[in-house]
Structures are given as C-alpha cells and as structure tokens.
Image 1 (cartoon, helix red, strand yellow):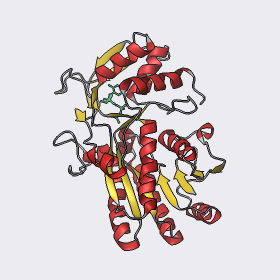
Image 2 (cartoon, helix red, strand yellow):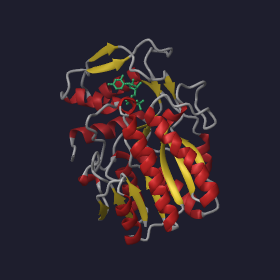
Image 3 (cartoon, helix red, strand yellow):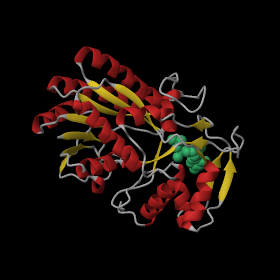
Image 4 (tube, protein in one colour):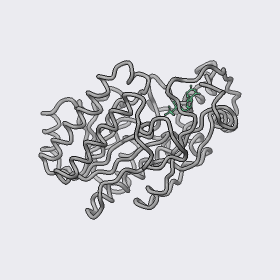
Length: 324
Ligand code: UDP
C-alpha cells in the first residue's frame, strides 16, 4: 500500500488517480486545510494533520505501507516570506517527523515534492540539476532543507528517495473528474480562464520589461497528469530496489511566455481576456525552463499531455465544469 500525504490536493489527487489506475492500493493522509474531500479518490482516507505525530504513527500501524509519496505542504511563495514559521514548521519540521516515523516503521521509500524555485535566480538556462541551489524565499528554503535532510537519512538509515523538482504544474484530469481549485487562486492559467469565464474583469500581467522576446516571464508548463505519471515511475524506481536516491527536474524543457499563455487561452476559449500590465511581482525570475534529460533517462518518463493546447483545453474543461 502507498501512503500519499496531501492526496486531497491538486497534484496529490491526480497522482492518486494514476496510482489506482496502475493497480496500487492507496491511503490518503490530508488535513483538508487546502485539499478537497471530493478529490480523495481512494476509500482509504485519514484526516490527519502532519503535525500530529501519534496519529501518523497510528496510520503506519493500521496499513501495510510500503512507500510514501509526500505532497502535503504550504506552497505560496509570497506568504512564505511573511510567515516563515508556518513554512519551516509544516514543510520542514513536520516532514522530518514523518521521515522519523518511516525509519522507525521500516518504510524506506520516499518520493518528495520539491520545487524549481530551489534554484533561486538562474545563473543559466535551461536549468539542470547541478545548478546551485540558492533559494530566495522561505518556501524554497523549506524544501531545500528537506532535500538536505534526505541526503543524510539515506546515508545513515538507508532511506531512499526521489526528489522531484517541479516546474509549473497546470492542466486538469482529461476525464474532468478532478482539477485545480485553490483559494486564493494565484496561478496564471486558472486566473486567465476565470477572466475568460467572466468571473474576473481582467488579468494582470506582472511585468513586461523582462529580457525575453515579448518582455514577459517564461516558464516551463507541465501537465499535472504527466507530473503524476512521473511519481509512479519514481515509486517503481525505488521499489525495484536497485537505484540510488536521485534529484530530478520535472519539466518539459520548453518555455512559454505569459503573453503566449494568454493568447492560447484566448484561442481555446474564444473569449477576449482583457489584460492590465502592471509592475513585476517580487521574486519572479525572467526565465525558468528545465533541462529535463535526467528524468527521461532515469525514469523513462515522457510527457504526453504537456502541449499547451492539451494543458489549456483540459484546464478550461475543468474551469467550466468544476466539481469542487
Ligand atoms: N503571472 C501573471 N499574472 C498573474 C499570475 C501570474 O503575469 O495573475 C505570471 C507570473 O509573474 C509568472 C507566470 O505568470 O511569470 C507564472 O506564474 P504562476 O503564479 O502561475 O506560477 P509560478 O511561476 O509563480 O510558480
């Protein structure tokens, strides 16, 4: 059985869906502070806070857990700098506690949600995994600390991990069963689609003076089902037992500008999507694009749904037929 923390959240729920399609038994642990009960697709659900050590110990006693995929975390960059305690406490300290319970229970396979923001301001692009890790916000630092802890836990306790550094997760389940539903919503694609729907009057473009061809930021957008698939391949890599712990970028290797994203949203939805150009958002590097060779080599992973068209079509289908 696979324990998925944060399995009621956006990436977590899509991963649970793919795990179950592949025949795995899954138990979801989530406190529902940000996740949605409707997004929990397994009958095995434990509403537990990551802070609650005893309750987590009980979960490990109750189920025959073989591996853990750990999504549960706070992930708002701006908020993390205002309330760093919240991020270090939950994302770092509570993860350390989870790792200790794993070691104590003899569960030694761990797939970890890390982030490309760990690289800070890129010194070169595309970013490979060897790029220095130099976080510029508490969220990224809280994740880097766990990556470092995992190095030591591997050497001392043989806890093997795959650390997946996500680029921009987006899109929705192609069946329309689950999708992205954040409150507040801060991400570009769902916000653009809310404007298309008429839920918001306009979309703000954060900065048009970046050193990029059209002046707006470039990001590497990856469909959430492709992300989910990489987690299953990471799990299989660990469960095969022959591999070393690894850190992998999870991006497609292709970048799109904010303006290109908005234009594709206009084409797909048929709505005008009015925009307002405002100042840069603090902490946004101009270009974040993955060198994604290593994940392809190590996990034999090939993105299937990450064309911009499929990403935005699936997100639009979800936005207009949301279940939660
Ligand atoms: N962005 C924007 N307007 C918005 C939200 C985002 O111009 O209302 C830009 C943001 O500056 C970044 C890109 O869109 O360059 C993607 O931002 P998002 O918040 O979706 O993901 P992030 O890159 O922060 O993980």
